[in-house]
Image 1 (tube, helix red, strand yellow):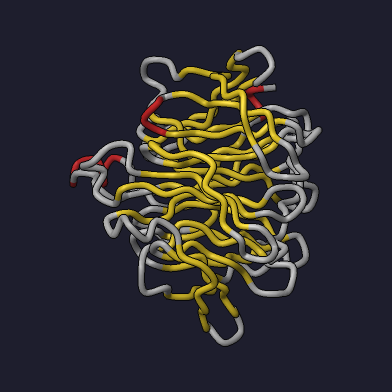
Image 2 (cartoon, rainbow, N blue to C red):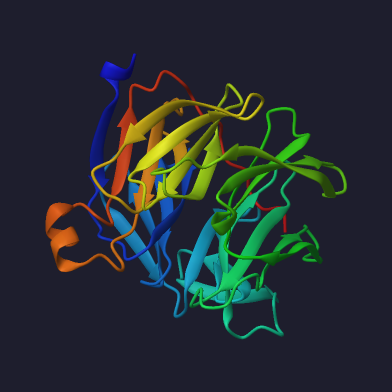
Length: 296
């Protein structure tokens, strides 16, 4: 099966920090962001065209909104984005007492609640971040504090487990999750990164209930069975700073992987000219699931 896996660069926008890929089924487009480049990108798999919106501050995720458009994490604000007019409207702010923080990864849970975390911008100070949820009436709940770099998140197929990554802990964690209330508890480690695997960053769950974790500085995406904690597969990419991943394509059997070229030396840049591009992995033999839209 491994021999049939094919990795290709499909989006040749060299993002400084590409992140947060989301597949949009209706248009067969991939939505993703460039955090430091301060842009939301939308790539059409049908036409290969890219549309972009400038956000004026760091943008860490963008997700579809049920009422239309998107919501995005810009600076420390959750903003509504009207794609047709390129207009942004702030909905709610987080970490108001921490001006050196910014939002990082965010994702919508199966009933439409947005979860998003924060981190200290320079990464000079540790444990400054938190994890929040925002529900349909824009009420904000803080679930975790003392987070270093709030990153990958997704939910189990039965919606009873929330998977979460605080990057510098070098683990993928699980919580019991109450889909009705959004409460989480009973935190435990499901996978501990091994030597050479890099830092756990963004992740997604497939239709078999297994996790695909992008490994920053590891140049790979690893496939983990969260019930056993076993790594099942490693997909190598031609760039070291792989940042996040999602399934997409007509039947969700393609894995899209974003990457980063920020902080690469000149020799590293020449060794990995595709750094910052977005990749498509085919032939994995699994399918992902559609993403959820924010209910607010």
